[in-house]
Length: 210
Image (cartoon, rainbow, N blue to C red; front, side, top):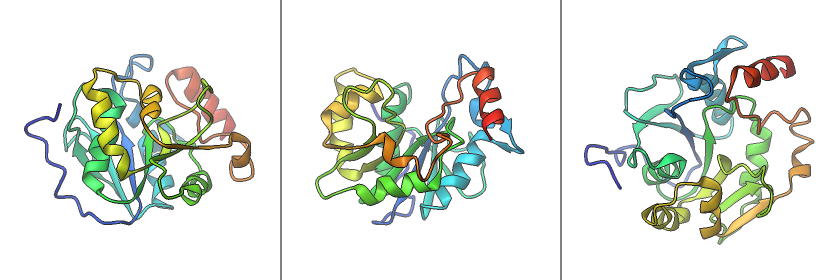
């Protein structure tokens, strides 16, 4: 549950779109902090910040501490729910931003295309807690490159209280608008947006595809 020393409520709030970048994971397969791995002259997290900044007016990085990362164009805030996985990071970001539709993306998805994020934002309808590419039975559904409304905060917090940590399972407690994977091909023909960098092999694949 919330870390006693964490405070994200001082971040400017409003209804404009915000971007929540989740960082500070253990990076077991990579063996080093994935966020700071470089490709094409930038760290992975710098690529993500640049991509979301084309769509979002505000960007935060949710990390273990407020000084974990210092990246131009973003403010780093401490995770309110340490050790609760990405769902805790999403809740931290939604708490920081307040009302509105907000992008959520992991720091290890540097190929994300702004056009994909715009499509998800524009497809959201009143009553949707989230917009996610895929379908309920799609094992490749990516809840960490998606759009969440602030209304998702309460059910996601309750989900964590039940002791569960899976971000994909957490979608089951939300009103999700599922976005057809084929519909993003026009804005992301190379299919880079949902490429996770978890290993040196993934990094080599990204470099080759870029």
